[in-house]
Image (cartoon, rainbow, N blue to C red):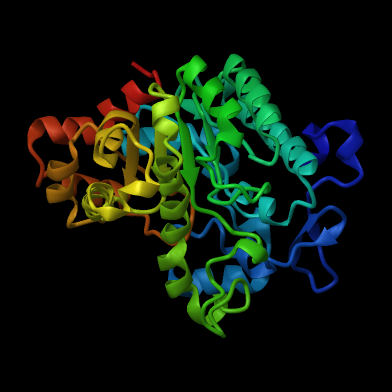
Amino acid sequence: LWERYVEPAYRARAIRVRRGGDGRDFLEVDGRPARLTTPEMLGGLGGMGKSLEELAAACLAGRYAESAPPAATDPAARLALLDHDGIARALLYPSLGLQWEAEAPDPGYALAHTRAYNRWIEEFSAGSGGRLVPIAHLSLGDPEAAARELRRAVRAGARGGFLLPFTLSGLPHGHPAHDPLWAAAEELDVPIAIHTGVDPTTRDLHRRFDGLTWPEGVVQGIWYLQLMFAQAVQQAFSTFFLYATFDRFPQLKLVVLESGAGWLAYWLDRMDAFATGPLRVTLPLRARPSTYVRRQCWISADPDERALPPVIEHVGDDRFLWATDYPHSDHGAGYMEELHELGERLPADSRRRLFGENAARLYGLD
């Protein structure tokens, strides 16, 4: 992908998946084997629907392409999967794109490879009749360049952009230094999402306990590490309130992805409580945080979130989306059954909004 689509200046240093001397694949970033993405991860990345034995074998084999299901790499197979599941359209986010940016040597390198991915996903989706919807990978190392790429990608068919929960600049997402990107998203009327991913070691939350660091703790602690991924997204999300980003950009649309959604009710209450108490002196907002969430924020729920109905009622049923997480192995393949079970516990209007109306309106897919 990157060797073909990246600009010539970066081609010799392009990200690659290579076959090692042990017969397993490894990710190469800037001419060096990636440390934060292991062969086991490459082998297991497309493991949704595999049994534990099959997933273990795929991880040990470490073969990226061989382990990926056809619908992850072939648009025709993906459309067939949508037909099977009864899904009209799918918004496409990357897999390896959630991994490599943590080891990018500099913002220019990262942005060049996001542009390469975006050109590829635009081609991947082009013949789908609008059913496969590309989302642009963006990076905040250079906000002006990210804004230019968002404009280009939207002209080419993307319906929004996404960011990882760290920034290569080190500045919080909501910081005014990143305003060029928020201005572009507002102007284009497209949402920006924050999606979980692998963090650089210097920015990693998984440093609190010995033996549970990334990637050293993955083999024995992936359950714990996966559970904690939402924390990074919560931190990035909260900076938009700390820096009053929504006051500067009242039409900005922000989406929180692959972090679960049940925590949002607590987060709203906690943010509002702090915003109305003595700590409000550090929060330069014109309204309560919950006001901005109900006006400008959306969150994607997992179909297996059994506690979600009261959260939807508390926050508002126009704020929630759902996702399959296909083809990642941290969720099972029974997402449609789980979604319909969840829907049975919601009022008809809320069910309709969760199942598709909210996403169609947010991403302009009506």
